[in-house]
Amino acid sequence: MNAPQSPVRFPFSPRHAMKFGTPVPDMGTGPIPAESVTSPEYFEREREQIFKQAWLQVGRVEEIPNPGDYFTRELHVFKSNIVVVRGKDGAVRAFHNMCTHRGMALATEPCGNTRGFTCEFHGWGFGLDGSLQAVPAIESFPGLDKGKLGLKALACDTWNGFIFVHWNPQPKQSLAEFMGPLAKDMDGFPFDQCQHIAHYTARVKANWKLSIDAFQEAYHATYLHRHAIPGAGDIELALPTSVRFYGPHRSVSCWLKTDIQPTPAEAIAYKYGHFGFVKADQGDSRGLNPSGDESWWFDINVFFPNFFCDLGRGWYFTYNFWPVSANETVWVMNIYQMQAADAGDRLAQEFTRIVLRDTVYEDMSTMEFSQKAFDSGVITEQTIGDTEIAMRHQYWVADEWVNGRRP
Image 1 (cartoon, rainbow, N blue to C red):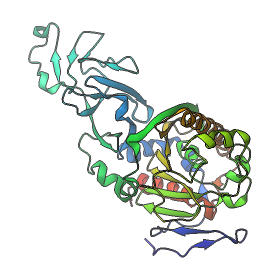
Image 2: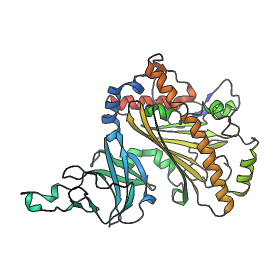
Image 3: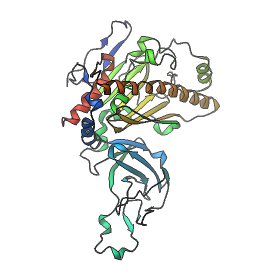
Image 4: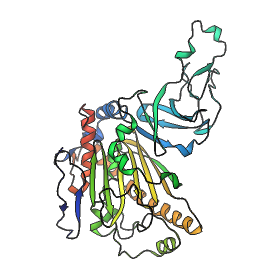
């Protein structure tokens, strides 16, 4: 790791510099080969060396508040569907959603509440702790040991209400060790006081890293978001205020101009509401702005390999990028805002939901075009600039993990 760098000042930005809040890894400076977003062989190595070796965020505890509550997730990268359930003891557990008899799915609905899981194929019954409890006609299975045929578990743990799983039931790193200092920077944010206001998902024909690229740099904002985000047409908004690296994870802080003329809808929404995506002057500052930047707007926090948790004052949103194949990804977004106290806050929530929806639709409009270009073989590499340093970090970390050189 290199020593922290001095602020980088850009020729076209006399008023603004990008700071590094942590040491910067030696990631090189050249173009990024397209192989990592096109090669099926490379993707299979990612499946084994990245996704089966990392903690992955799959939900929040509010989705399963009571004993017996459960939800399922289709994780194509594992070639498995999983079920996450709250036990009678209050513990949250995760299992591969398959009967250990002949593989039938046990939870066939996306969510629900149950006293146990019973296979609809042959009636084998499992407790909320995964133990095998009932086998019809057990006498026809001589020597069967129910203690060895419980549900196949994944490691499961939580952080600030977020539920994570690990392919290995006994991973080498705990969740806290894996998340490291980036999670500590975010501790104190009032996640438990926020209300879920929107959910979006899409299946896109693009590599998971290429999909992530559109969301972890602001260089594109000046052009792509010039209509959706007030003031985005100013080139200065394309520059991060600060960047931090935490092993495989990264964090980028963005800045907001305060002299932007609001749209009529924005002016009404934020006149009566306390919190919102482009209303950066109010709200609790805990867990935010770790580098102490001026004109700070929000932090883009990326937990490797595929989970974003972006924080602003009074709101946050998350992305998950679930690989399906080398050139297909399931994208999921959830938006949260401080609990609404009155009708004005509800209006601000709705404005935030719409602004973010329109913004991410613009981001997503780029992915499949880029994937087609690289799949064609006409373009064989990506050229990465200084403002896109988070992208460079992503490709560098992925390549290190794929090749057994985890930083």
